[in-house]
Each structure stands twice: as structure tokens, then as C-alpha cells.
Image (tube, rainbow, N blue to C red; front, side, top):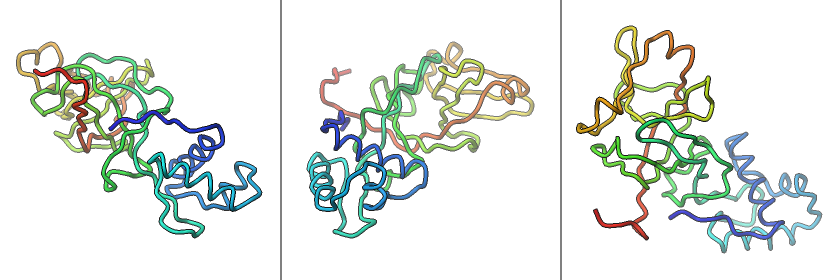
Length: 210
């Protein structure tokens, strides 16, 4: 389920600090590190604030020890096109609740717009969990971003074929419109892999029947 972060000022600052440590260092922030970063002098006050954040479902406290804080979701970084490229990557002010095995400092979520990956079970309005990396295997579903226009990215299956790259849709009726062939030199200069899709999440609340 997608959740809007609804915390007071102090709680939001602490939560952002926790996420920053996961993002930058691949680990939980210690309580002492949080107190130093946020100027909190009392450990009991920090414990109270952490328990409030835990009640909202954003973190889990594994025990009253220094390194015991775990995230309960991945940040929603924007939207991604499953058709033509569109703008993506907004500020992460929403989080997607996912199973613990998908929670990782390198993972994030994107909202899918478009139907070009429908035969892979990815439809308009789904969320995908992406593992951030700049390499992939042929046939994997990737987030491919254009470097010249940094606000363009698209969701496609990746195939390197000799001196060209094919970004392949999975919608046979619109294959010619949505599949993109990029010459190898243009790919190397202007495009990058930003991650691979590892999970599709569908929120049925408010979705129309198809």
C-alpha cells in the first residue's frame, strides 16, 4: 500500500535521517548518530519519537539497542513510462509498503504510466520496485534513462544486439510504436541503465475493473 508520510516536524526529520543513512551507508543509523544529526540531547526523547514513527508503520524497532531500526518500505521516487518516455523522479515524500525481502538501501519504487508492458503483467497504475544498478542482462525489464534530457526515462525489456540496443515493449498490438531501437554509439553516449524491475505491486483500491 502507498503511504503518505504523515509525521510532525521532528518525526519527519528523524525519519529522513534514518533513510539518509540507509541510502548513503547501506545500514541503519544508530541512535547516537540520530541524536547528533538532529540535535537531540535526551535518549528518552528520541525513544519516544521513534515509537511514534513505529506506530505510523514506517520503521520497526528490534530492541532498545543502538542499531535496532529497520525501514518498513521503499521510497516512491516518481513515475515511469511504460510507453513513450515521460518525466520521472520526484521528491520521495511517499513510501510503498513491501515485504521485508524487498527493503534494501538500493531499492526504490516507481508509479507506472502506460500499457506497453501489459503482457508482462505490468499495467497503468501499478507500482514497480526497482533495484538501483547500472548493468543488466539481456531480457531483463529495466529503467532506461536519457542523459541528454535527464527527466526522460522508460520501462522496457533490454536487448543488446550487436551494435544496437533494443528497448522492447510487451504489447504486441502497439509493438512498432513503443519498441525503440538505439544505435550502439547513441546508447553509450546518451543512455544509461538506472535499475532493474524486481517486483510489481498492484493496489486494487480505487482501480476500475477492466
